[in-house]
Amino acid sequence: MAHFTKKASTKQEIPTASLPDIIFMLLIFFMVTTVLREVTLLVQNALPQAEAIEKIEQKRLVSYIYIGEAKEGDLRGEPAVQIDDALVEDINTIRDTMYRKLQEEPRMIVSLKVDSDSETGLLYDVQQELRVAQALRINYSTRRELPN
Amino acid sequence: MPLLKRRTTREAEIPTSSMADIAFLLLIFFLVTTTIDVDTGIYMELPPPLEDTEPPEISDRNLLTVLVNRDGDVLVEGEFMTLGDIRQEVIRHVTNNGADPNYADTPSKAIVSFKTERQASYEMYVDVLDELRSAYVDIRDGYARSNFGAPDYATYKERLPADQEDQVADAFPIKISLAEPDPGTGG
Image 1 (cartoon, chains in turn purple, blue):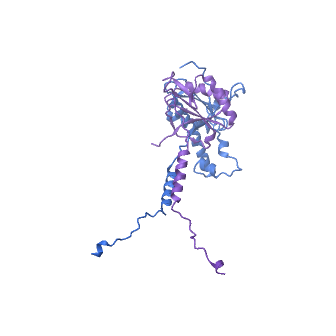
Image 2 (cartoon, chains in turn cyan, green; image 1 turned 45 degrees about the horizontal axis):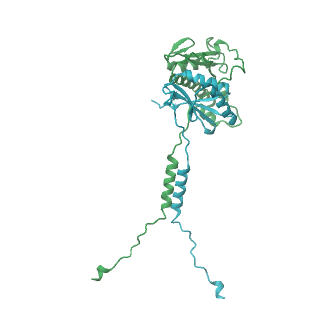
Image 3 (cartoon, helix red, strand yellow; image 1 turned 45 degrees about the vertical axis):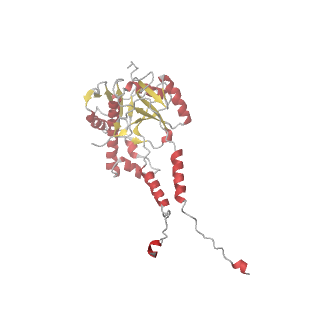
């Protein structure tokens, strides 16, 4: 029974020549599909420096409020508040906006990104709004102070 | 001349088996060097709105008021002070333990109240707030060092088992109160 003893002479190796291509393809796929969400700043925003700072570990919980001089539009040069991608026209609408966000994420932390040249008056107005909305956990965003 | 006619049959292929390694190396290099920038900042808690709760009565000695005016002058308990001196003043206030009648009774009762004029610059606001926070960091570091043998508070907290209470934070709670701002007077 010579037929049954015949061994197949196929090679048992997987060709690895195309492996780099596969990895490159993966790399490029993820590079192309990854979107780093960036907010277009409509206000001046140079953050101050501080020493006693903490990291925000959970970025999901953070919602940002930008305060500074408006760069464009009718309010140009005036201190303005930006939430998400738009300038806030009426300060009193902040309480509703933030209240809604707080409903979605009860553990929300509001990160206040305030321009270091701005005055604190507008910041106080925003904080009063946050208090009304019960969004009490805030974070003054600052850069780490470089040791002299 | 048969020598000239002879052709050498060299292989013209580039070895591709190491390409995978090169790709991996590149991948790992970029994985390691990429930093998605971390947000840092000063964490604070706003007081709840006034309609809900009456502000509690606080005796004057437990309250250290810090004011900043539009020119960037710092007033601590009504006296001018430089930015660098605030930290020592807060440390004295909090760790007083009833010794000096002008400062706080106990560390847990000590409150620092912080307020600025509306026209004060935000940079000054953060600078002063940073000093206030730093004072508490110094106090906690010192307490963790002397009572628990940890080099600083962060290390103490790391070593702390999950089921134990943070005694340092209990002894020196950070009570920085963002005072009720003056009603807006514009600009």
